[in-house]
Length: 110
Image (cartoon, rainbow, N blue to C red; front, side, top):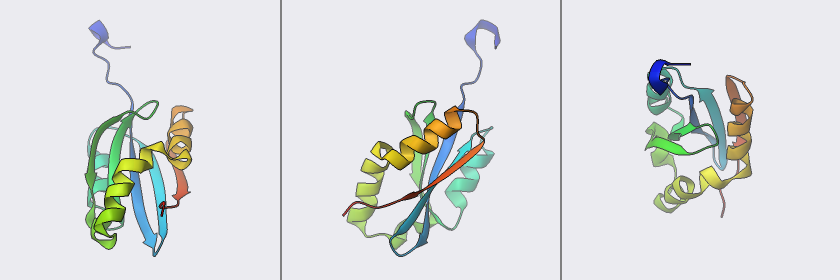
């Protein structure tokens, strides 16, 4: 516990990676400093990434190098809807339970 309530809150980085045509994967990691966020944002397969709090509230987000692989409408739908999916919620729940890493397949809605 930090002094005067200044303890750093636990956040997670959830990246959506492009694994091939119509194949996306959610990869979640506990965030320690900015290293994981920088790595997720720069990874060649990252479509989008989000920094989220325990429970899934978004703190920050951005696109990655593979965002150009999706059509603009698909990218916008992904940014809008991914945090509402059961796969996203399962990843955050696994991280909340104490795991350092969690991963699930994600089906882009049509």
